Length: 69
Image 1: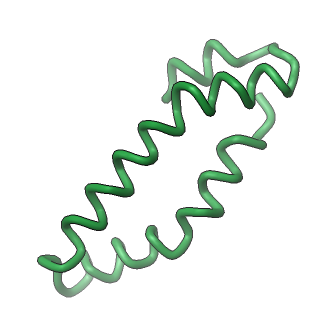
Image 2: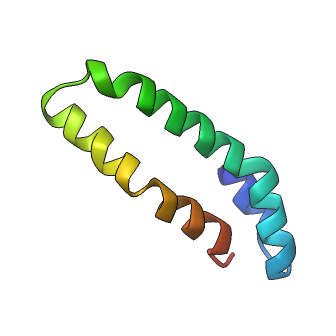
């Protein structure tokens, strides 16, 4: 994702959004899938952290697509 941000630097907003959607969004989707898979087995602070991330995931995706470079 850092490489995507480096490549997006200086691009017009619409091109940055397209690049992030093509390259970074699939990575976030994989991370979310892993968290959902691991959540039932987690406990304590780890479970709390996973739940926090999952609750905020939609906002994270929106932020990632709209964040200026």
